[in-house]
Length: 315
Image (cartoon, rainbow, N blue to C red):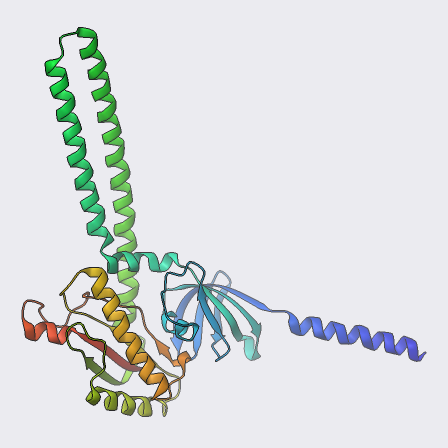
């Protein structure tokens, strides 16, 4: 009798253990964010996901280039595709353990920041120049040829070359169209978030930087600390940190500079302002995109070397 009861208890124990180990998988697109909670739109409907200090965010393709997993939360913005592994919580909430993002969502942003669209056009121009030289060389060879069979062979070769050029142009046009569509989609997502239509701005600060510098001025350090103190007294807040640069230098350099500036501000907010990583969000380095003043003057460029910081609460 006791052996039977012990056996039944053992089965019950393992059943409970197995049940508690069952995880939750959520795959979809972030539809909104309130502090440390996300709303994810899936094929089955919307799911509320809770971020904790134990949550890990990662990108399997490594395109983020962030310096630590702690800052992975900063990229969790509306419009981003996510694959979440978590555990069930109360009232249908999923407690996130690991959040894997789709690197393809960031490729278009990387193209904007690294200037790949102009580069693609430059490559196209180079190829056109090479093709033109080939056609000129072939024409010269035809002009100097005296043998009818040679002329016919060269003409056939030219026709083949023209066909290859036409195919290349078609492929290039298709590729450029995809790049343009990706850029437009990324900008739409970024502008949607930056418009802050669903959020109230409770406090904000603008940190200015010297040319080529990522060092936060002393007066801005104090301003950021006060902003952090104000934020921690709000319910469901989060902080948006967006880095910018002026037009000096190339696109890749400006993108890295704006990202490093945003990183410096996020570091200060977390280490000196006491803001948890789960409360900071950033749609990425903007480079020289979205200036607030003309880059044609020194005064305008000084205004554009900045990091915009906003304390947000969902309406």
